[in-house]
View 1 (cartoon, rainbow, N blue to C red):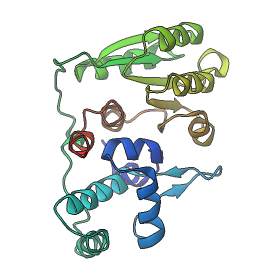
View 2 (view 1 turned 90 degrees about the vertical axis):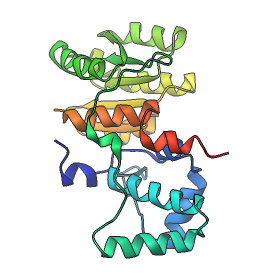
View 3 (view 1 turned 90 degrees about the horizontal axis):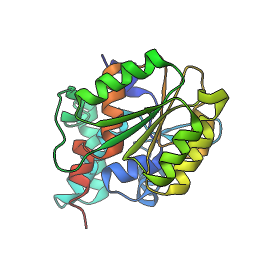
Length: 230
């Protein structure tokens, strides 16, 4: 299950958080600089890496602003709640509940190097209702990305002798395919620089993996609320 360490570790790029919450990256940076309350970790390459806790907190601030508070007041309220050990609102997307996706297929391209790991990920993604395409060759994955872009790409960076980073760049070039990068070694900086929006270290925690995919494909509570913004 997803423990405190998982929730506090940097997973999401600022681009991913911006898209999930419907708040511009410029605004997120301004909040960080002005209020110094939600400060993401920085990778060695200078990339901002937001934890799930921080996304919860930003979601709370966004909701308070939508209800009419000024940003300064929303941050002040968050600080007060954190002091009272109630840092954020509960988020349903963590519950791990299965939901079949009926209105338009959500497709996940799973580019893996290990067949056992692929079967593991495929099972849990299909349980969530996603349509999963599993490939073990980077050339095939590249062709799919260009001809039939999926809703999200999940890629093991070490597949095909380390071709996963090139796949991240291809997905970025396609323009609308969010990427969850996976690796058994620490390649977070390289993944983010290549265009990945989130990074997880193997072996995967099932709930964290599924909830991260759900966030990136836009079926989380975060993005559903964010889509109401003009």
